[in-house]
Length: 133
Image (cartoon, rainbow, N blue to C red; front, side, top):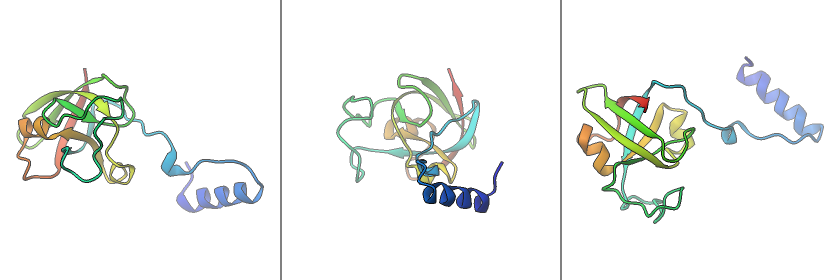
């Protein structure tokens, strides 16, 4: 595996040589399950939330759905709050969280209702275990 400096030099060399490349930020995000990470919640009232989800469903923050990268639409996931052991089953119908948050450990955005099942929405981030069903 390359360290950051070696990778940056290689990318710079590729640009100088005229080769096409894609940046690290556009690389596909993939996960292995079971997955440990952080969950947040989002609502239709949040800035930037669109009327439709990434799979063109009307966004409904009262549905048991979630946004996640690297899994197919319709995938069912069991999300367990590590602090209290409470779980919720959600269906993936959107993409997220933002890539910069994924790099920081946030791996899933739950709808407001799904998040409320396992934690208070006053808590913005929780540690979770995610299992693919």
